[in-house]
Length: 212
Image (cartoon, rainbow, N blue to C red; front, side, top):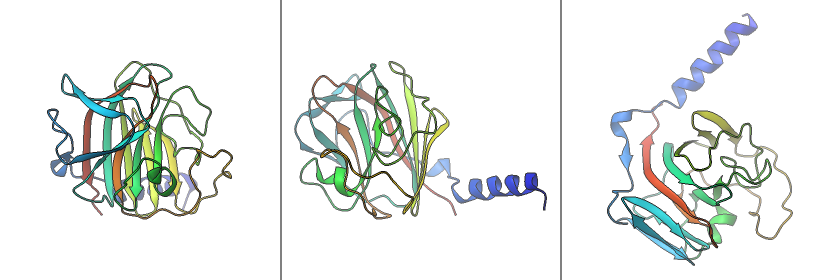
């Protein structure tokens, strides 16, 4: 088989594995209140003009009804330049404070000022950004595909992270970086309010099961 044909076949197989049925897309935020969400840690989230808004921190607003397995998560967010937040995935149990998800789940970073291992769309301090498509001050769409131990992150349609559980990662250097080690294939999902003057707005939070 020619190399070009192999590449096309690989792309086709990948597309089939992670395809979604849009009719099964479920909104996790109703634009009115925080039903089915619980906050832990410092700071808070408020609702302003139908949007979730971070306020102070460090804290986490997590979705309580269920753990998420093989799904595509879509988060539409906006923040000014140098504002920090995160999307947490694969949290193994309901958190009672804000740091457990850092060390036992994964944080998909929202921050356009940091280096390649701390940029929007990476698994915080674990993966290096393949691209930097986030646009400060505009609405951005982050799509996180969880397929077993495979995590894909696209921002504005551009691939930023392609990580398989067990891929090599850099050693932990700072106390506030996450502990290294495997994460579960199913876990709770949440949104971070980072702290200080960081303000991020979330307009849309949806989840769609993967079709296999």
